[in-house]
Length: 195
Image 1: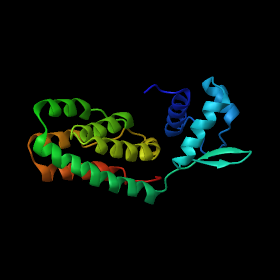
Image 2: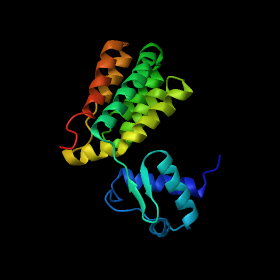
Image 3: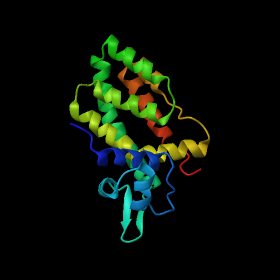
Image 4: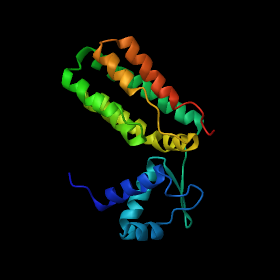
């Protein structure tokens, strides 16, 4: 399926929101976004409406759009759902991951930024072979990316993960340990909110 211009603008706006290139206290205006991305207002309008449907923006007629941020409880709830779904992935991987799967995960596990974090967790879900699980995990990560980026910015450091420990436990077929490190990894996202 070919990506439309609206899809490209949607991804660009979402990336700018997640990485604080758009100010959450200022209205996002169609005309300015069209100029910013070098496109007409139609694909921008479609992208902004899509972001509103997803709950990322709020539309204010004749003014523009404002960015919606997750509050602490909403972020915690995304982490809870991630633990349930990624816990399912870890259980499958402990039983079924082959040497090539472990090699792929280990290569991804050493990086410590939000993009690498998303890729690692999505890859775990993908390696289960469950075609729906990756989409669920990716969606939950997508919802919480801006908040994770904000936490890292406020803490002045890269994202500290337990990815290598999770991979080691999967390779050792130690489900309990893998789940413990997954929980520790996700709990990091719940600490020091707004500090």
